[in-house]
Image (cartoon, rainbow, N blue to C red; front, side, top):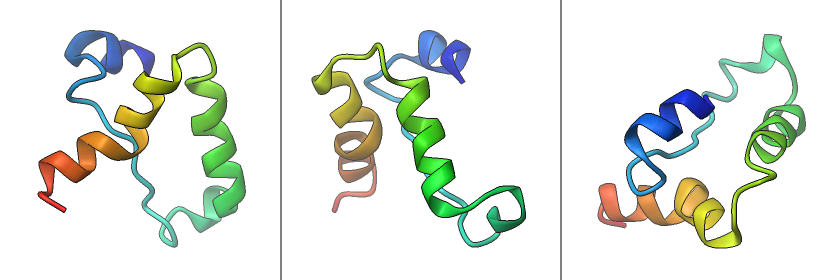
Length: 61
């Protein structure tokens, strides 16, 4: 995951859930806790882009 973010940058990467299809792999909370742990060293601005801003811009929401 971090390699992908390093390659395309926080301006283009975004996190998403495939829930409930991912349910056999873990609960919703566990999935988001993993995303949170992966991005723990990122700034608040970078995290906002990965979890919200990039999707909003890309999908024109």
